[in-house]
Image (cartoon, rainbow, N blue to C red):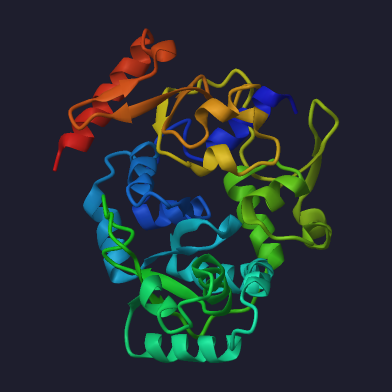
Amino acid sequence: MTRRELNRATLARQLLLERSSMTAVDTVAHLAGMQGQDSSAPYVGLWSRVDGFRRDELTDAVERGEVVRSSLMRLTIHVVTREDFHWLQPTLQPTLERRARGAARLPGADLDGIERAARERLAAGPASMTELRALADPALDDNALADFLHARIAYRHVPPSGTWRFGGASRHAAVDRLGEPDLERLVVRYMQAFGPATVQDIQAWSGATRLRAAVDALGDRLVELRGEDGARLYDLPEAPRPPAETPAPVRLLPVWDNLLLSHADRSRVIPEGRARDLIGRPVVLVDGVAAGGWRFTGERVEVDAGVAGNDDVAAEAQRLTAWLLDG
């Protein structure tokens, strides 16, 4: 597959070739979760992918608990469906446990006692990380303590955390009765949302390791392809792989959109030499690749000079402006 064919395949799975008619919850599931450090980013990401998306649709799903916000893939904050959280969290637990080795930065601490106190506090109701850290010796390193607690206790953020333009400190609630880890399911869901891809790509998205065995175990449930650089790519047999000449409309993506972060080799969506300029900014896609950035001034969407002369970019920026100003 050429780089352009990989681009079109990934855009198709990411619902960026044509807006979808799916619900917000079904879209979050289809995408295997959405990056959510910025609480408003999933909303903009859904607007770019779902025809007629309304903000209250996602807000209602978060408030009902159908969509959960927590630290998951790459140890970063994502929003996922409740159903996916219950198997993703235990599947990614070894990654979180590696983070818990930051306990080495907590010399002499009674780690079991700290965990027990945190669980007791969460049993009484949601708590902020500041409140949980206050249960331990104040001389302990705050960041190491937070890493330790995140690794030991499965939690979700409690609304309004995860809702439109929320900017306060998140409160956490412990989650019990999780499912079983399932690395093969992790691989399949990744391919549905981001394939075709290498084993290294899956690892870059998830933060998980030992994925070669999971890929091999899937056997003929995957097909093997070759990239133009000779890379060994895997994919689901029936997944969409549109022709290279398939048109890709202009799209405006939020900061940290997973399209840009979920491959070890990002060249299918980010031109060579542009990653430093574009990662960490809301991005404009032109012909399927990141061509510049954008920002909302509070009154309008402004795009970088390099894409400002594009009529399609101007039209999409106008549409996003109207949506952002509507309520």
